[in-house]
Image (cartoon, rainbow, N blue to C red; front, side, top):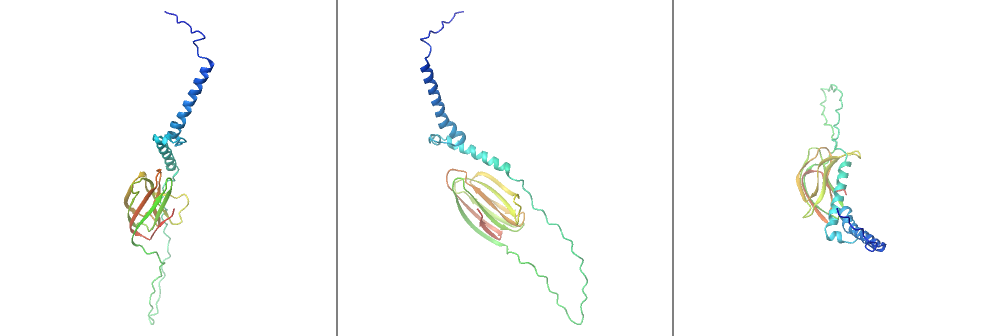
Length: 225
């Protein structure tokens, strides 16, 4: 075995050299924190280098996925509206008519209901980054509507759902949802009397224009958000 020679005091780094190395290490660590860690993990980019290297977009996607997962976990379980219970009707009493005077039976009056006819519409909405919007159709139970919507080259998150008239605050009935979707089409069949439609949110960093086309049996269409 060879015994290594202990370094002399002149060969050891001085206090000034150690301090300078420590400062350099701290500066490098802070630089990496600001230019790499913050943009890629938290979408915080004070220097602008993170976006140029694509790290800020990575952080925005991570945050967006976390927000959407939290929103999905917090969404109430879909519940179908309770079916109305039949009300017992009293047995009809026999009517004795005076044969000498003919009596004309009057038909019972029925409450007026909104007329449901085939309608067709096209609506366009513009969404800034982070903005949401909702369009609802007023429909009767069992009514069907053919729909097609497109983000016109962009992508949006969407939630198709419905609310009965006078629905409780926590009520939720979903027909389908998706993330980063460019378009969707199909047939929307109302599960109950009420309002049914789509909610879109732009989770990208650019404006998106959504165009909705509907055709079918609905009473009215309206943007509610």
